[in-house]
Length: 99
Image (cartoon, rainbow, N blue to C red; front, side):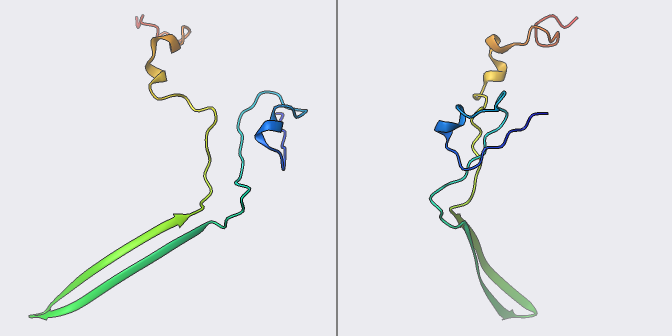
């Protein structure tokens, strides 16, 4: 299986690279260089209200900044699986003749 790897390129220079057959997946990183960070916090108040009863009030939160993510460049548009123009004629279950 041919699996070429191109390091330190851009999307503009990707298609002109040698050794590429058919593109299966493209993964790129953000070159701005911001550090991915996740913040977590919680705040809790516990109060004994008497008669053997304790009440807890809590708030928990988290947020992520500059996280890495993957964008699928070959994504199938929403609903395209059900469009009549995209029916596979070799599949007998989707061609309309389920006999």
